[in-house]
Amino acid sequence: MRKVLTSDELYEARLASGVPLFNDQKMKLGVFGSNCSYGVMASLAPSTYEVTWDHTVKIAKQAEDLGFEAMVPIARYKGMGGESNFNGENYETHTWAAGLAQATEKIMVFSTIHVPAKHPVVAAKESVTVDHISGGRFGLNLTMGWYAAEMGMFGVTQREHDERYAYGSEWTEIMKKLWTVDGEFDYKGKYFDLKRLEAEPKPIQEPYPVLVNAGNSPAGLEFCAKECDFNFIAFATAAEAKETAARVRGIARNHGKNLGILSYGNIISRETEKETQELYNQILDMGDWGVAESVSKGLGSESGSFEQIKAMQERFITGYGGYPLIGTPEQVVDQLVKISEAGVDGMLLGFLDYHEDLKFFGDHILPLMKQAGLRY
Image (tube, rainbow, N blue to C red; front, side):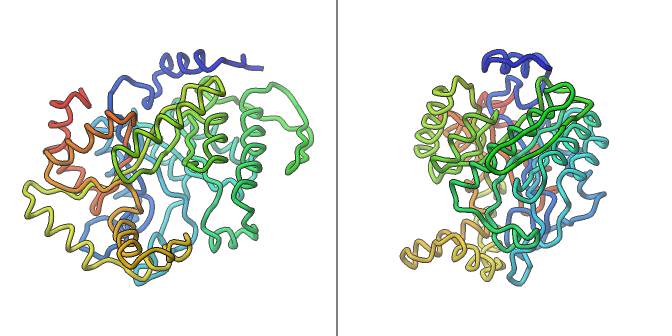
């Protein structure tokens, strides 16, 4: 059996093994959602982005060349409706990660998984396989499954919110045991009763691949603090990010854990404010308001004022509800500096046109991030 590491030992092992998300860049960078149609922007605005394998590899190699630490997909099996059937064309994320692992050399490749939709024995084996293909660059983003229509495709009844995390805790414990325990073992809990479990080979990463979760509720924060390496927080302002990051780290410390903080944002940027505003307006004007309305109702967000509902829907259209990094390159970097100062270790980024906008990012935004001390 692999040695059970303390939090400090685990952190040091991550550093020593060269896991990209544990490097010393002040602001880590990832690409988010490039495995689904329309990515993170529910808009029919013109874009060269497409869900083809050649285009997928091109984006990953471009991000790697820019020094990005991670490629993180969205787990999607069913489109979200509207004129675009937003995200309805998508790649499964473990095989997506395996393909990108073979096509790249340095960048981390993540799978995102809906815990209720896959057995932990299968997920553990798939994850080890990709970890070996990548030479130890694999990570797993765990979600508890929020899209009820999608869960219905698997015959899964959506559990009550906190129970999803109780189920997820058992699921994750089984997976970790498969990654670390030699020989056979049994597992019996509230949700699983499994016999003679075993799994070889073990992951390349010690003691197992990097785990990320986006839980922000009390139950989600407890799960993430106990089980994961990074919490994937959401926030509306830098001040909120600072409060949330501090609270998350405090909960993790109560469990004797060091926990990194990631978030996601959508970049809408051009060289001038006028060009940026024109692009932003085009994205909204051609937005899929049908899917935005459907999602806001599904999240129970129809009880606010008209202005609050419209703002929520606009934020979904322009970036899946992520933090809006909108402005000139200078303005975007000013926002990233504030986010970093708030305690956020890295941002996963979405774009309207991943390939073309990554070019712009590399030419105009990344150099300013280096000047600001966020990258080197």
